[in-house]
Image (cartoon, rainbow, N blue to C red; front, side, top):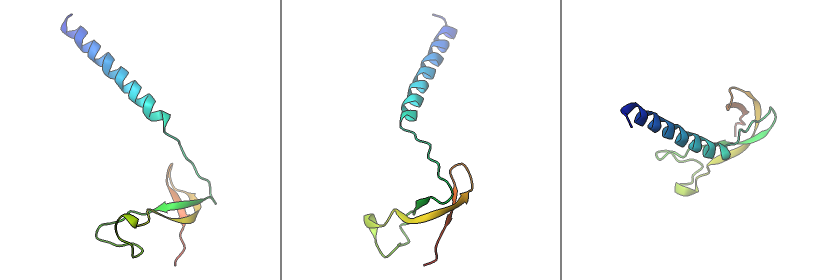
Length: 85
């Protein structure tokens, strides 16, 4: 085998590996879409320097809600109707 044939074989095997990985990743990927008026949870990020809802550590809530969707901002971004409490 010459040098160019080795390179072609390497590229072919890399492409085959990428195709297998893509096929596996797409098996478990679901495109979710919501419509205006749907009720959804809002994900909150617990910051180490900031307490949320007076609960510390692993017990902090990860999601709050339910909030109504007012409109679509992007492909996966939505405007929520947040209530002041």
